[in-house]
Length: 245
Image 1 (cartoon, helix red, strand yellow):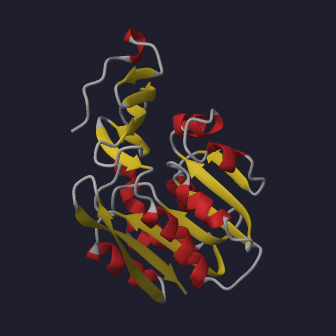
Image 2 (image 1 turned 30 degrees about the vertical axis):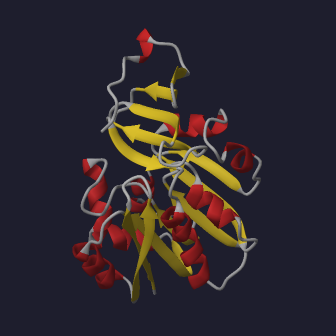
Image 3 (image 1 turned 90 degrees about the vertical axis):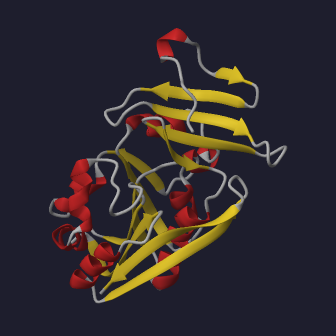
């Protein structure tokens, strides 16, 4: 359960508590956004960076297999070179990093809704800051990726990778829901180059989203990513949706 935090004006940052460091705490239109770093009691010596939004857990540097797999599987599915990648949602940067590991990626643009998250990267507050800030193929844009995909395409991409919401059925913003419908996917498909692949991250399976994908795309692939979470002492599965024509 998230800790009760004081308002930023009442405390200085970074705030150090035994085994917990608050790196940033600031208001957003989606609620209070917190970046924190802490040591794990269950794994002495392991330090993780975590993000909460509106006092709810959002993401962590502890288990990143599914965020990386979003890029890795999409790259396995695409045989091209000089690829243009569009990532919706910066987060802690693991999806973008995994894409940029491949020398087949010529450029990767990340569209991030919260300017504060972009600031964290630029200020060196997240684990991948140094690596990503030095990457000439990476650009990070402040904006709404869903609005981008709903509009007519100014350019097309070989891979479009979305990791914004908890799941197709549990969105961070009410306006996000249209993307997960057949109409929203039809708009997004216009932004894919020939042979392009759409990938979407989710913490849960979604049959309605699979049905919508199958209405718009010739090929749909559902990829579970299961890891053992030592924090809760059980396996957990995230779900990746891929689609192409």
